Length: 157
Image (cartoon, rainbow, N blue to C red; front, side, top):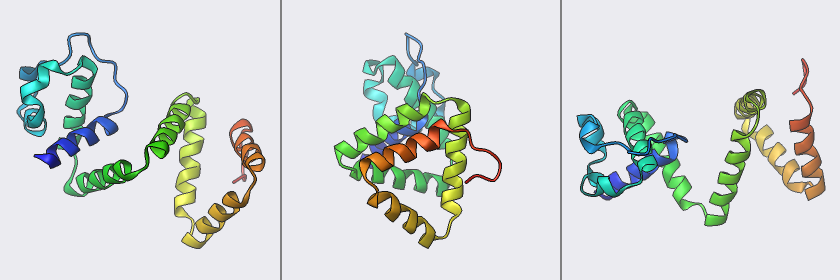
């Protein structure tokens, strides 16, 4: 029972931002699979806000379409999220809002940079983290501004 509640919360987090209809989602309109995944909410479904019903129903769809490996990865991500101090969660939320407000081109560039970073050897990633950690706040600000304000040309990393 507790695991289902945790999974439902995780689904809310991973469902993304959705504009819900004013009337929400009727329990009877959910598929059998959605109802199974969301069974812990059955008794109070009608009391949930319309946007929450929408996010939960979409999250249940995503959850149902995941493989066991994907579900385990989602559970692990949610556990990591839950274990973060509230200040760090707020920081992550704020950075996500900033990201969502960026142009599609900037979002794409950030995703590509992150993929490139993840492909680096662990030693190189550690070196970059240390170099960033050792910077002054002003140096970090300049570096971030440089990374987001200038278009990247061919051959630039």
